[in-house]
Each structure stands twice: as structure tokens, then as C-alpha cells.
Length: 312
Ligand code: PPE
Image 1 (spheres, rainbow, N blue to C red):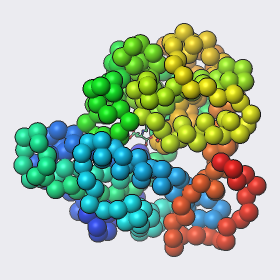
Image 2 (cartoon, helix red, strand yellow):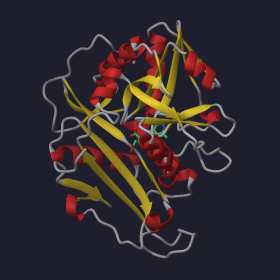
Image 3 (cartoon, helix red, strand yellow):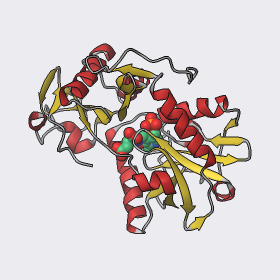
Image 4 (cartoon, helix red, strand yellow):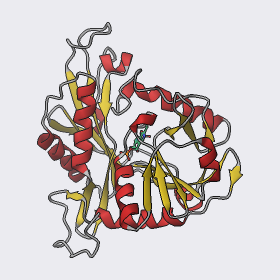
């Protein structure tokens, strides 16, 4: 991953040069993690670059801000336009987009209310998060000694900056022990999620995942995969998941904007997963990119092709 191709960003209403997207070190968000963000992908489609499920990502951004008591000083239409502008100005086709809202410089001390809410949008090309090889061969994961925080401690449904220390700790521990990713358990010892992904298990015709009762961030990729699995005729179950079920699963995979759909090949060095559904769901997601999209104005290729897969 590199920012080398990112020439432009957007900050507080204006397109600016990447190097000018800066903040003062007294910013509240830097000291206390008081910010919210999104991770969004733009994909090249036959119709031109399209932002995948932009409305859903913006809805979650506003919901995250609300659960932290933060008022974003731009509306969703303005942020959607800002996102498209950043993609267009950088002339990106496939990229990852990072909208970020945080309390800037004003006062320090825990109460952020006197600090301005700063809003920025960055974008860069980002290969799949767990690596192209991980996408093909699957990744080796461990169960983290760090538990996912409970919703009585933090708003688990919010994608809030400071909350990610939990994920950073879990991921660093996993990498230090030679694994590609960590799976966190919830406070009760049930499966929660990866450091930056939701989890799915497959058993026979059943596709199983958990929900926000287990401290997960409800992912937008997760939501698409649930719909695709149903459309493919799988029986979908959303419920509590145990470590034993993970070890007994025929297939397990992670979903996320950055990680996309990444198969899990080993859990704590126990291997044996198959990748059948993972591949099906991935092709389903490729198909949805042409449908469930927001085309970036000014970058369209040709008129919209009729796509046979329209119900995802
Ligand atoms: N859980 C967590 C904790 C999480 O961070 C993500 C996304 C998900 C689930 C999946 O959500 P969704 O992207 O809507 O399907 N993680 C973002 C940040 C990754 C990063 O390393 O930064 C992402 O994938 O963009």
C-alpha cells in the first residue's frame, strides 16, 4: 500500500493537494481518538469507476458520528460529491476511499465540544487488504488474547477512531506470532469478528454469521454477502457462533471493504477449509459492482450495459 499516486484530497469543503491535508498536533482527535471514519471502495466497471454502496457507507458514517455526539458540518450529498471529486481529480479507477471526521484543534481535556469538527476525504489504490495470495490461498488466523469490547463499553456499531486500538492490539499480536489476522472473541467467549472484518462460516447448505449482539461492526460487505448467499439458495443463519463451530466448519471466510472476501485456510494452524462458497460469493460481489453503485460523474466509459444480475 502506498500513497504515491494520491495527488489530491478534500478537506473541509475544498479539494486540496495531498501534502496540504494536514492538522495541528493539538487536534483533539489525535490525543483521544475522537473521530469517526469510513472505508469505501471504488471499482472499475464496464460503465466507468463506481463507488460501491456509497449511500450505505455514508449512512453508517452519520450514525457513527451521532453515537459519539458529533455533528458533521456537511450533508450526505456534499460528502458524496466530495468523494466523487477525490476519485475524479486523482483519476483513479479502482481505489479505496477514506472519509474521516474528527475533532480538531480548539481545547484539550476530554470534553471535545469546543473543538471544530474537521472533515477530510482521502483515496489511494489499495490491493486487497490481506494480500492477493490470501485471497487465492486463504489466510492463517489465530484467536486473539484480546477480547472485542462489549457494547456497554463502547458503541460497537460505530466506526470510531479510538476504538481501533482494540483491533491494532489484536492484529499486532497475531502478526508477531506469525498469523495473517486475528479473530476476536466477544466478552462472553463467543466469536465476534476479525480485527477489520466480519466472519462467516459454511456448513452444508448453511451460511452462518453473527450479529451486533456479539460486538461486531455490522459490515456493509457482510450485508451484501448475506443477500448474495440467500439469492444463491443457501440457508442463511444469523446467530451466536462458538470456537468449536469455527473449527468444525467446512468453510470460513472474512468479509470487509478492505479485505473483500478472504478465505480462512487455517485457524491456529489447524487447516482444511474449502473455498467453494467464498468463490461464489466473490463472483456475486463482482457482479454487484455493476449494479449497486454510484458512478463517478465525469469518468464514465460507455452507456450502462444491461447486466443480467440485477437483484443484488
Ligand atoms: N469489522 C471491523 C472491526 C471493521 O473494521 C470492518 C471494516 C468490518 C467489520 C467490515 O465492514 P465493511 O467494510 O462495512 O464490510 N474495516 C475497514 C477498515 C480496515 C482498515 O484496515 O483500515 C475496511 O475494511 O475498510
